[in-house]
Structures are given as structure tokens and as C-alpha cells.
Length: 254
Image (tube, rainbow, N blue to C red; front, side, top):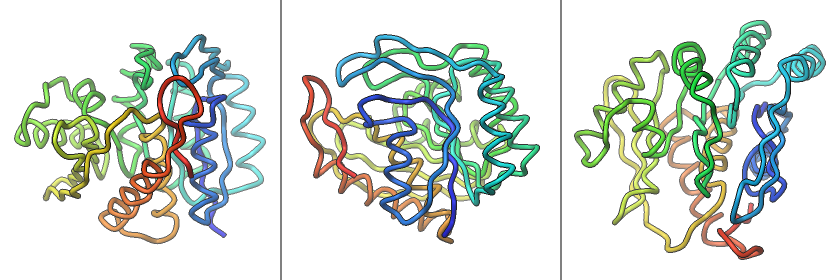
């Protein structure tokens, strides 16, 4: 069985973060392991508090876990501090982790900032160049690229800028588009569009579910374009079966 590693923050609702990633891995037949970067106190309406783990705690998780189990792929989610990014970079290099997918978690679905400015700079300059793919929603792609995305032309330009940071593949997810929820994959040469329907309502953890599905499909031998379509269908079905358990956003049913 293929093993996938998730590196990110914990979400007590299990609607996002490493809890969501592990659920997705299991659903897709990939064994999930994890390194935690932060604890959070949150529900479906608010992120109340973020408790970042020290680099020492992050480092000992890597060293204990990866000396024993070798993942076939990995993804990063919430990385709150510059020190955490530096620790992750060091260990990904040390253990030669393959098929790295970066979900550049910048803001929560409820609007809370989930990465500090210095950490975002470090992610752009040193972590993205190590990656197989970056999976960003439109607001994240705007922040990474520094340009406003208000047309397909500007979306392609943003994808080119992010690709220029050193990743192999850029995926910009269209969940924030008004009419459709199409996703766009740019590999440095061509742009692939995966059409998708727009669902009413607000859903927690769609970015986490997509990125963890994408790395799972890479682990299972899918090519990037195949993994895009398979991940999109997986998230679409999770949205269709979403649960209204709290007072805020829907939680995906994996």
C-alpha cells in the first residue's frame, strides 16, 4: 500500500487540516501519516485561536516518523510560522520526500489569517521550488502572484508567475468564480481546464480535500491531468453529500 504524508495544522471539526487529509487518504486507499505544525481552536463559524508548534516539536515528529516509514508522496497545508517552514524544508530534503503538493493555506474559510508574512515569503522562495504541484484557490493565487485575477487571461498570467517560482504544475481552483467552478492546470506549456458546476452554500475544507486527493492519486500512479479530474470529482461528491452539523459552513462527507 502506498503511503502519503500530510504536514499541517489540526482542525477539531475534522472538516479541514490533517484530519481531513487523513480521511481522504483512507477513502482513496492510501495509508496516511502526519506531521502536525499547529493546533487550532475552531468550529464551523470561527477560528478562535492558533497554537503553533515549536520547530523542535515539528523536527522530532519528522525524525521519529520518517526514519521508520517512507512516504511515496506528501502535501503541506497550514504552516503558520517562518521557523516551521524552515524545519519542513530541512526535513523534506533530508528524507528526500517525493511528489510534494503544496496547498498554500493563507486564510481560513471564515477569514482568519493562517500564515504569517515571513512564513509566506519563505514558502514562495524555498518551499514551492521543491514541489511537484501547487494547488491554490483564486484568492491564494492572487496573493502568491501579486496580480488581480478577474479574467482567464489574468488567471493564466498568475499561473505563469507561480510556475516561475519553481514548481512543476500549478492548479488554480475556480470555486470563487461566480458562474462555474472550473479548475485550471498549467504545466509551463499548456493550460488544461476542468469544467465544474457551482454549488450553493459555503463549504469547509474543500481546498484540503482537493490537495490531499491530488497527492493520493499521484501516489496511485495517476498522471497530473488524470489526478486533476479525479480529485475534482472526489470533492464534487463530497460537497453533494455535505453535512450541516454546526451553525456555520457545511462539512464535507468523505
